[in-house]
Length: 443
Ligand code: HEM
Image 1 (cartoon, helix red, strand yellow):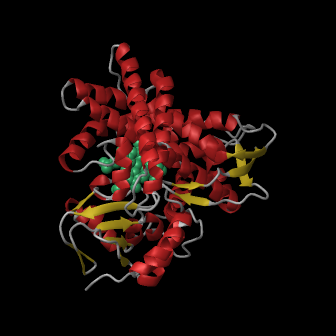
Image 2 (cartoon, protein in one colour):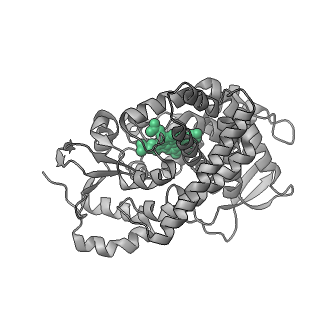
Image 3 (cartoon, protein in one colour):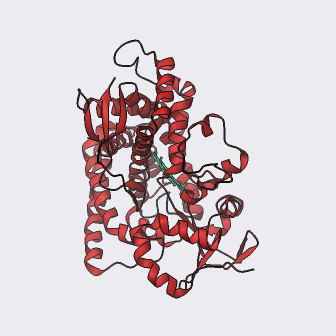
């Protein structure tokens, strides 16, 4: 059996549609051609994989048969080098082993502390009498502080900020290529700009390292772990730079988007927000006017509704809306043979909207997660990917967003800002275009 799909001329007319709204394009392709769709790309076969069983085959059951040598990760690796997100095989395995201890529960208590502190600063910047604010800008600043302080340490904050600016500049150049998961090319002026941005990245990460080295001890955070790996010869110095850049890219905008979309959905669904608030009052105490005490690591187990509000938001707006793999050898997906060299595009955004797994899929219902997802839905729910390449920062992100949300909502409520239109932009991550304005009211 062969996968069905659009004809070459369909693709020519589709390019402007893909650029304008890639999510609508993916949905229309799936609606018309089904769960396994072949795109007629010259030389490079591409399939859109939308069934949970085929996605699982690629990401989990036959993960060795699928590499990250795709246009999407190729473009990113122009910035990250062979960091954890883009590398494959033995290099990846070694890197994952080196970085893993920084994401163990011991390290996550620091994430909890920094997330609450960053969210408290975010809320303190809101107008004290209430008003309209861009919560996306606040979330970006807050998550930047958390990544910087927990992975690289406050001591390198200044150089860390320079590193982040350089990462954003370099990403902007390659975004054109990552814009569609289809192969792209880079015109010469962009190539020159990318070269300059990468040179600045190299210099900024060298500055981060030099400052830490000047302090004598390597430290216990991710930077410290990586420095020790360099000293023992397990990691080349370029590898250190690649991982610093990777963590900024993977751990900053994604978490900010998760927090922003959750606030947006809770503003739309006041009933769901009320349920979260009841929980916050029960757990943190609601006596004083500031909404009880600040949340912390020990409260996570009790903040069931708050976490479910985040998980359901990650279902509707998964920041990593598409992941890709390339077939090392021929494989069979849902009974269809797929040749070696095929790029598989897997979209959590589509997987999360299957009505047989998530009834009334467009509705924001955190209760789905409070009650626990049924097995089939659990397989399809992939905001952090699946299998051995599962996001290393999953628990980091869930701790951060849950506690940040608790800290924000214990002191304020959020509401749609009159007259503003929220638009989704799906580039490297799924983000609100031009920020996200909400009305905030102090409690
Ligand atoms: C809500 C926030 C986040 C989302 C939605 C997210 C999503 C993802 C997804 C889908 C993948 C798998 C990609 C694939 O299979 O091709 C991934 C991998 C990764 N993420 Fe995250 N992520 C988030 C937060 C973070 C954080 C906070 C960090 C680090 C501080 C991080 C670091 C990474 C790294 C290093 C990888 C590559 C792991 C590997 O291949 O071994 N992510 N992320």
